Amino acid sequence: MSNHNFKVQVASASSGHGSVYVVDGIESPRLYLKVGITYQFNIDTKGHPFYITIHAMGGTHKMEGDILGKAVEQGILEFTPEDSHVNFELYYQCNYHLKMGYKIIVEPMHQNKIYHLTSIDGLYNILNSGYISSRTDTNASVGLSSQYNHRESGNFIYVSLNSELPGVGRIGIQLVLSFDLLKDRKDYFLNYEWAYGKQNSSLPPSELDVFLKKHNPLYSEIIFTNKIPLDKYLIGINVVQMNPDIVKLIPEENRLQTINIDQIPIKYRHLININIVY
Image 1 (cartoon, rainbow, N blue to C red):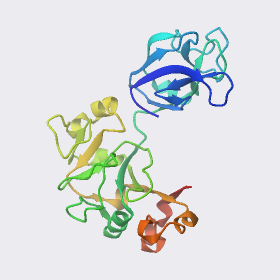
Image 2 (tube, rainbow, N blue to C red):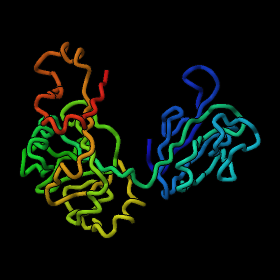
Image 3 (cartoon, rainbow, N blue to C red):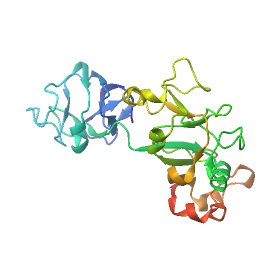
Image 4 (cartoon, rainbow, N blue to C red):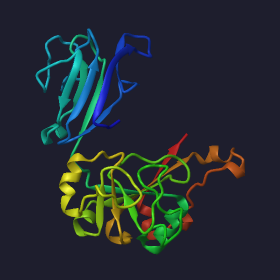
C-alpha cells in the first residue's frame, strides 16, 4: 500500500498469537514508499513503540537497527526515504515485541516506466494501429486513466506512474511504456489529481521533476495531446484475467473477455505477461 499518511494502531493478530500493527485498517501490510516524499505515521500504539529499522524482527528493547533515532507510541513519526534506503531492507517494528510489523519497500522517485490502462478491445485496436490514440480517434473503449471509473476525455491520452495492476474485466490491460517518452516529448501536461482534461493546476513538462517529487501515484496523471507510437516506447503488456477454466463455468452473457493471442500482432506477443486471478 502507498499513500503519504498512515494511521497506525494495535490489534490482536488474526492468527490468534499476540498483537500486530494495523496500518490504515490492514493487518501488517507491506508499505511502498518513494524516495524524497515525506510520510507521516499517525501512531496510537500505547505499550508498543513504533520505529523504522533494518532489523527484521524488532523487539530488542535496544532500538536495534533504528534509522530515525526515535520510537513513538502516541504521536507522529515522519520519514523521508533517501536514495540510500533503496538498497536496504527496511521494516516497521515494535521496540518491545517481536514481529508486529512488516517490510517497507523504498522505491526510486520513478521506476523508469509509465502506464496506460485499456480494455481488451482497446488493446487490439492499439496494437494493430501501432499507436496509443485518444478515444475520440479510435473508440470509446480504448482509454481509461489510473482511476478505474474515469474515462478519457476528448482528444487526450492518459498515462500514469501507478504500477498497480488493474482489476479483472473490461479494464484488465496495462500497457507499460518507457520513461523516455516523457524525456522525448513536450506535448503533455501534469495533473496531481485525475481530472477531465487540463486543469488550472496542471503543470507543464518543464516541471516534471517537481511533479515526480510531489505526486501521489494513485491519483496523479500525465495527459498527452498527440498519439504515442508503440515501436519506440512500448516495453510490456500486462494482462489481468480470470482462470480460463473458471471463465467456462460462467454463463456466456455474464462472461468476462479473455485475451485472444491470435489477434495480437506477432511482433508484440513477446511483451505479453498474463496474470491469472483465481
